[in-house]
Length: 232
Ligand SMILES: Nc1ncnc2c1ncn2[C@@H]1O[C@H](COP(=O)(O)OP(=O)(O)OP(=O)(O)O)[C@@H](O)[C@H]1O
Ligand SMILES: [Mg+2]
Image 1: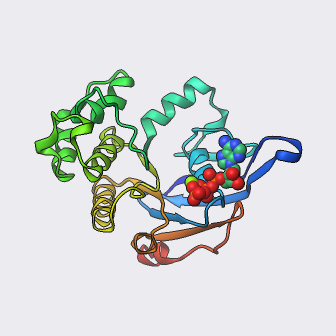
Image 2: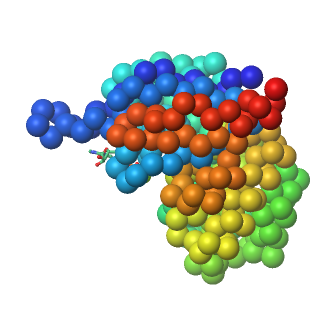
Image 3: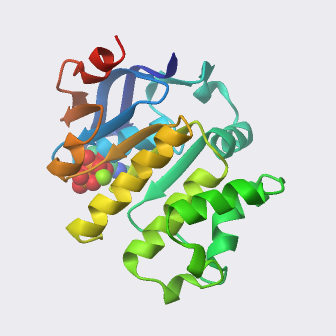
């Protein structure tokens, strides 16, 4: 089943002489439960694409559909709500709230949405990510890898259908990076989530079902067939 479809997606920043065509017509279809790595050189348009996929910024033209919904037909407020319900984000800079505990950070998106967290589910995530003994700690009392796991737990806690991660292990050593990515993958499989991760790490990319290479604002590879083969 298709969860995400991108059609002729273009994004130009600025106008006139200083205009930068960051995306030049990207087409992409992602199946529910796929784990995708996005790779490409610096400035090729990876983050721009991820931001559009998550509705964090609007494209110049083209469409993004998530779970059948053409997201840019939504008004800003509607888009914010849609995003909060359907998508979990993990960024390189963990974006944790320093005055909130680990647990409070993790359930923040749920509470922002006016809902009560499913404590049992959140505890399962916290356990799986090895954060049980850090529940009541504050971000500045955690190591980088632990903070990143909190950011992942936060992205997972509302059980979003899609997780988008922009170099989530960029600040971590290679052992911790592997652990964090492994956990992300396990969690995604367990909860049937679709995960799209930008990474510069070739080893990490190789663990994905499919690698998408971005070059100069376009997808450079024909579809890698691993996932389809696996599911044939
Ligand atoms: N807000 C912005 N305003 C103007 N230009 C931008 C903006 N954001 C990105 N760009 C430009 O768009 C192009 C693509 O940037 P993008 O951040 O998507 O690259 P990237 O592939 O994520 O690179 P990196 O690996 O360095 O993170 C670059 O030329 C960049 O300078
Ligand atoms: Mg980037």
